[in-house]
Length: 424
Image (cartoon, rainbow, N blue to C red):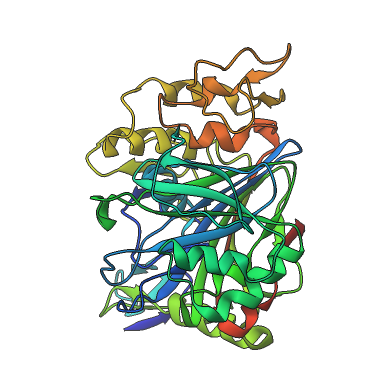
């Protein structure tokens, strides 16, 4: 039985459950050895933008089982790479997903009617060789990865260096890489340390000085198929929207519920909406909320407030920040059970979050000092080593922060230009 949906289209279910991430994800240019067949079919990223820094998180997972992989990202000078947490992506994914709830059916009395109701540095780390046309700015280990930051002004030199050092770069990427070289970008490349398995891959985050709401879509094309699904979460003091891409919308009046399968046609409508808008060069914005990281929010399905629960926990929480802390505990990524309570104090906080550490240094580093008078210390937002939320908030005022979710299913031809985001 399929009914036109007078039921609920919800930003989140009354009790959203945090689930593991999907497979086959990546962001930067992803490469595999010629003997491996590895196709990146989805990218999931988080971008935080403040006046003092921009932070890009990339969740790296793969379809298939490559024995070796390579990841390369063009970055502005001064960028540093750190390891993020699985809890960060798991929480944002679950908290912002569109969920359809079944319509209530009222078949009562004799009426007969039935109706629908409403990092660590290591100078000698790795085995990367030299090349006089490529400068190695930094090398080290971060989590399970060997990392290297490279610079060059010679066309073709970076590809040769990557090939010589086992990154297996597709020859077709050379014009794209050369274009980034001409534009003055450095490059961060990483691979798994010897003895590490692909199951040990963790999200990475790139911390860059200054405000930059741009994603390197041209590099994303490496390793993708005919289409690539993109999910991008943005954290800033504005609702961000893509420039130069159409705005897709799901026609809610066509939503229907199938009682036989206990599912809706939302996925089908979403797919058609993204494909129809400007030949697929389009983004959908299913979630955009100001203050939702630290404040309770309501939805049509949960008018008295959305609650979040994690696997293994029977205690729901009412903010995304608290859910993040709870998920980190469930994952074993933190042992700090008290930080979720501290987050409740930030809902109306108008002070800026300050960074007590030198640029690119983790908040737990002993070199960190004190923040300026009148600022919130970013370390107060960290749950021990679980510090993604704290890093995302540096330079921002908690009460003014927007969390926005953008989705696309871009044809490969649409990856010919970088994604620029603007307030909108």
